[in-house]
Structure formats: structure tokens, C-alpha cells
Image (cartoon, rainbow, N blue to C red):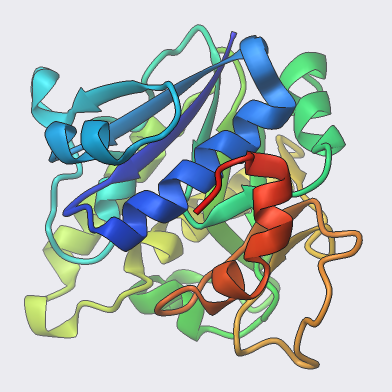
Length: 251
């Protein structure tokens, strides 16, 4: 079984709009082969705003929920890093949209050739890693933590917990940076990549699209997964017609 999971906190009309299209785009390509699970701190808001069928759970419906830190994006991993150890799990950002058949992701899910799956950053700079940039070696692999896959039996729970504890101990509130959670994920994946345990998704196909792209992205031709980052997610609105062709959700 494949589990596609999202996490949404303090949901707004905009975040629920993105969530609808994100989940529906994965449903389009994975169909009944996957379960679609949403974790949230506001179940009624998600239930009211969703136009598709999913499983919805409150963070607090689980014993001892983790990663409920209100600063930055740790809640991507709430209520726990691994939901079902016996399934292939894909943790997905709500601003990610499949536009073409994700053959690489499907191969990961079915073949078991790699224990983990992750997307890459467009930019090999240090700012996308927040306070964890200081722990990365000069030859680090530039990771984007928008989509993380864990094969049956594979589990980054202990590694992520160690990074989280380091962060809580060493990063004071006034020094918190928005990308600290991504930095933590990037940091723990470096050793897994060197061991050959990770499938790295090609960034030209699984692409971040935002105002930082040089040159600007004017077409989604050949893009399998569009990651519409940046405040207000401008690429989502720019390419909404193409996203709707897959999601089937009309405005």
C-alpha cells in the first residue's frame, strides 16, 4: 500500500485551495493504489473546504503527537514522522502538483530499489537550510524537503528526532529561520545519500517554480511535478489552467 500524506495547520481558504489541487493531482495518477491522508489542527475547516475524498485526522487524535512546534514548518511531520511502517509513505507539501505521470515515484514505490526518495533544490546556496547550513559539508547534496518518500520498513524517525532535539537545544527563538525544518531534513539525508539509500528525483522534472528561477519558467512542458513555492505561491496561479487539467477541480 502507498500512503500519500499532507499536513495543514491554521488552514486558510488559500491553503485549502492548494490542498484540493495537490491531493487531486496525486489521486489522478495513483488512483486506488494509494490512501490519501491529511493531518491537521482544524478538521472541520478541512472537511468543509475539501472537494475530494480523503482521510482526515486531527494531530491530537494520536497519542503523544510530535512536531507540534508552532515556529516554522515542523508540523509537516505531525503527528509523527512515520504513520504506517508497513506502507510506502510519501509526505507531500500542499503546494506540489503532479502534471504528468510520475514514473520515477511509481518506480520507487513498486521496485523497492531505494529505501528513500526526495526532491532536490534548484539552488546550491546555504539560505534554504536555515540554521542547519552550518552543519552541511561543502560537497552537500542540495535537498528540497517538499516531498519525502520512505519505503516499507524504512524510517527516518530517529534521525529527524535527533535533528529536532539539536534545533530545540541550540537555536534560540530569536534566531529561528523559516528553512530550519528543511535544513534538518537535508542534514539527515546526506549520510543516507552517500550510502546509496536514496532516489533523487531529477530537478528539471520535479521542479521548484518561483520568482527566483533564472531564467523565469514560462512553460510547464516536461515538468512532472510543479512545486509552487515562495510566499503566495505565484506559480500556482500562473499555471492553474494546467493544474486543473489534471486535478479536475473547477474554481
